Structures are given as C-alpha cells and as structure tokens.
Image (tube, rainbow, N blue to C red):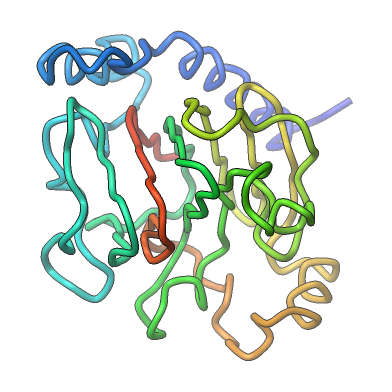
Length: 247
C-alpha cells in the first residue's frame, strides 16, 4: 500500500489521465484553423484544475528558441498544429518549471526523431546536455527503434520504454510527463512506460556509463525549461500542449 506523498502523486496522475483522455482531439481533417484551435482550447474544468496552455493552436507566445529570444525559422502553425519539417532550431518555454505534469499530442513523419526535454538549462550549447529527454521516435522506421533505450517514450539512453505502445508514423500519440521532486514518470497513450528517480544511485550509475557523464550539470536542475527538439530531419507535429504545476 502507498502512503503519504506517493499515494497523492498516484491519485493526481490518475486524475491527469482522465483530463488527457477527455481533452478533445485536434483537427484531423485540416478543414479550418478555427476549428482546430477550438479543439485545443482548455475547458473551464481543466482551467479550474490548474491546467495552463503552452500551445492553444494559435500562438507560440509561450516559446522561444534555445538561447534566443524569438522562435527559430521553420516552426509553423498549420490548421492549429505546431509543426516543423526538416532540421530547425530547438525551442524552449519562456517560463521555467520545477514540479509539473506536461501533457501533449504529437506525431512524426516516417523515420522521424525528436524529443521533449524537461528541467533544461541554457548552461551548454545544446539543451540535451542538461535536460533529461522523453524520446519521440518512429520506432518502425528509425534505426534508434532497434534499442528500447532510444525508442519512443524512453528516458533517452538511460531508461527503456516497452515495445508496442507508440503508434505508427503519421498517427497521433498522447504523452504525459510527471515530474515531482526527484520522481519522474513517462506515459504514452494512457500507459505508464517507466518511472525513475533523479539523483538516485541507479540513475547516477546510468549517467556515469552514458555520454552524459561529460556534462556535470546533466539532470541536476530542480527547475528549468521544457524543450522540444527540432534539429533532426523529418516532420514533427504538436497540439494540445498543456501543463499543470504541482506543489
């Protein structure tokens, strides 16, 4: 039986999954931008529960380029969806977050590769040297899909995700990332993929054995930026991007 903080986190996560599941899906027909933005708007119930939109289908005001004050070229809003094609600059939120739940929908083109970073800083040339990464991947079409450590939903290069959860290329997936203290959970399409503890002996050993060992600030920030990787080729699309700050 769970007690105290662990039980509260479990209850909050289950409520979050209900919110994510009940959020209207974005426009799949491409019929109009107005319909798509309406579909990505938060409901009054979600706002009352503490959710905040990071992308509502109409504006990228919550975002900027990594180590930039404006959005990099190549990111566009098309029919209420934030999308990029080809290699472009990574983007980060203007605000920083410590404990939070991040929910969003994403899809990749064939052989696509991207990622979601959390608690990132601008200490290094690239955000992935400071921030843990939730891997976004076309598992069937990209070579990284041959290892569960670098497949969709993995904590990139450190903790593997199970096979068979991600949908094929060009289909929408739903992601939930829960970061509370040092505890991190990755979810996809309503299924919990993995859980780990930042700073634990297990985590430290995995970092030491990885390429991140060369970057002493990797995964150490207690708060930081949410980031989206754009520097790989291929198409990435995002919608329904929302966050809820946890105490």
